[in-house]
Length: 86
Image (cartoon, rainbow, N blue to C red; front, top):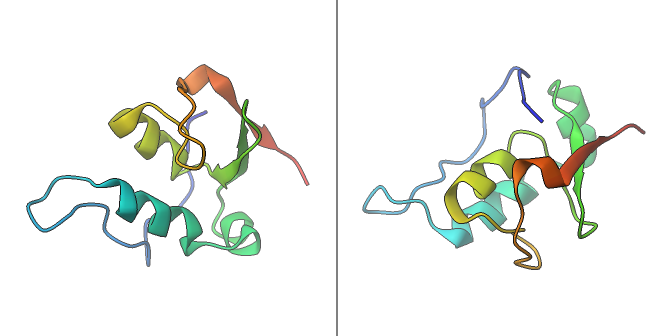
């Protein structure tokens, strides 16, 4: 699912002190937006096959870096999540 929404504005930086991404910063980033803020920012809420919900801008970053669900660590690929329409 590609994200063409506006807005990395106000989102926390995802890299650690040495510039490398770390899993703790992914958790913080995932929680940054409430669902209302996700929708208001022009992004979508997406669900993984393991049932967890994320921002459409956050999950692809996590999958590119670690290849697993940030919540339960199930191995995921980009074809294993889909948009939720509320």
